[in-house]
Length: 415
Image 1: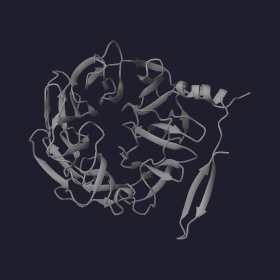
Image 2: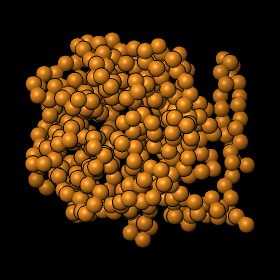
Image 3: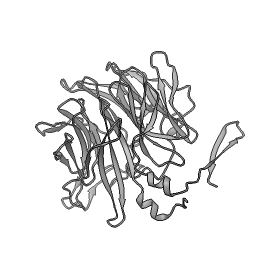
Image 4: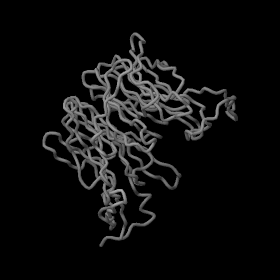
């Protein structure tokens, strides 16, 4: 007989996140986080499993291991870690792992490593904060001349500017790629690996406003695709032919409460983006909140697949499914939908498989696989199967209320 959930059960929850399918579709790498009450911290692991059988291929369990990213040949991973750092020491490191033996240290950055990804077979890009204020040697104080009306949650206000860096994995040499008077919040390499597109927040007084730029790695030539002023974008990627950019964000028509949409813009100076999902009165970012995702959260962003279609998440009440957009004619069709939430996903190079993080009202987050050919959706991991066997989980009941303006407002209660 199943029992009620207890407080102690929460310490047994396993939190998978950030599924990354290899370009050839053979493997899925993801982060696993477990709470450790005795040491008052989270234990991080990186798992690599077979995408068909779910069989474990490799496991990394160093301090703070997270954010695995595949190279273009599906043979190596880079990942972020705090291996070798003291408990009170700041910073993070970037490692290279070839699925056997020990990972190799690439670099350490005092202020952290974010958004690391491959540009080519030998080049990796990443974002790291750069101090812009005078800090004494003991770091007891910071010389602050500006006081923005917002707080970034990481130390003193306006202490850093996040910049884009480039690293050669063979030599270990790296250099700062951008020197913008603002914060780089997202970036993506072109398919050919000769350019990078990045989003910068240039105005500290209005931190939600963004600008989109493209930088040529060989010549250093840079163009501004979307100038700061109207739009707020948070993610982007390139089209398969590198001629257009997919942008994820909004035009601030309702301020920060505006729905995020999928936009497309040509890679040219002062381009005008086109809202491809304007006809959908829905948010294209997962807006369902939950406490069981754990401390590492990588929300789904739209992806332009190699078959020419765009896959993006769509909120529908308390559910988040995946939809497919055909950019040439604007047609939108459901791809995966049901009584569940898809929080993040990645696709293989052939656009035949999706690896996704799925949860529902009564199911904890697990890694799932979806076949684009057969439309089969199957569970790949069973990290929290014990809960389903031991605990009686209540299913919330949906309520719908029509407001005075005719809009339907949804709510839920647990009996």
